Image (tube, rainbow, N blue to C red; front, side, top):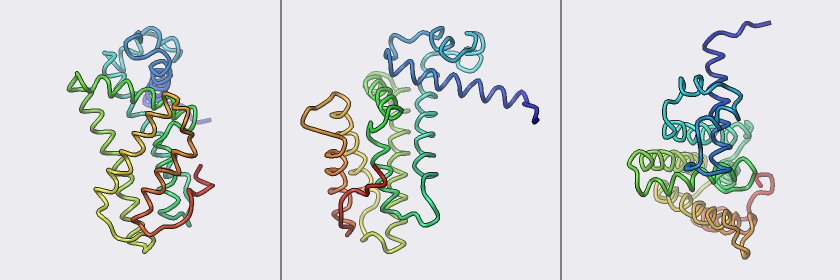
Length: 209
């Protein structure tokens, strides 16, 4: 049996706190969050929570980054050695919409972040950071597809920004429950705009839903 080090325990505690924070923020909103509530959800003392995060604002920012990084790993680790840029682009689009319970929770946090970003420079910096990272995933995938001869050439930065913006727009409508929109119709609309200039034909890949 491997003995856990202090660093292992600290990392596990931090992950538990960030997971709990993401859940609580999504459920009741940032303004209603108290450090005590997060500590109780994480199963740690308030002292332990304050050791890792001394303010709600820092906890919120790190919870967003933590959730975003997990989504990124899911997108890239799902692939196989024979993975294609087309399939990866489809997974990124799915992961950029509130298509699962965890992604719905992540989206709820993003909506909190965007509201705060209008007023607070720190929140604005986090919003820009995460937006650039998401566009970076898309741009890298487009470049890989072009290099492999899978996609037609395009301005990868501009096209990544377009795809990201489409995901944001449709994601907001899915979150507030637009009755004329479903996850499948949102994905199909984004996919049509995303692959039209890339020379890719066909509907959204079934295995990436």
